[in-house]
Image 1 (tube, each protein chain N blue to C red):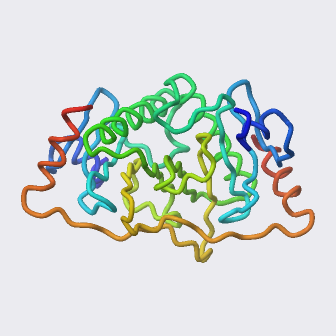
Image 2: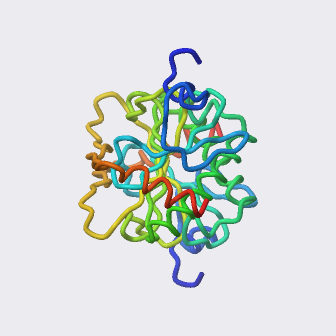
Length: 136
Length: 136
């Protein structure tokens, strides 16, 4: 896609610190890392969100994510990682080309990735469950 | 696994608000939701983290995640989602049975899921890149 920064990286028009590439997927270091070693895993085809990625490409994307997480684990030497995919602007997706973040975690890194909790009242949980089940 | 709360949910020994189930995967509402409709997607076999899940089961897990995200989108009516998988205690994994969070996002939900940024100094980015590439 013409104005997509990730498409430009994939096409080699913008430089990046690539760590992995195959026919379907590319991975490079995030230039604004949450922790050092923070990688992005990106399908080469321009899909906007998770919902747009066909199952085959999605399987390739998650397999590559596992492979790179493993490499991060062996190279940076820790076993804790957050895998995050923000879909849609309200969810914090900054580039409209689907991508997965792999964030290596270190003891005492002071990164906060928790969330506050909401409560279901009375039968609300059941009602939300039934609503979703109708469409799955 | 005997003491695993998710294995007990899968075996029906602990109740849950299930929204989806197939041969490999189960999904139910998180009882401490970041937002209403927050689902967990769990492989039926007990794997601890992403790195332990064989590629076939991983493909099934992510396909189910997409399916449930789609159903959430249709039922709860919004197009923004965070997909999060915490791997390892330091990354905030509370239950040692691999699982994916799907968190529907709503305008003004005041959920903060951002992170602060670190900086690579001089040749550090290149050196991290080379380290990872050796193992990928």
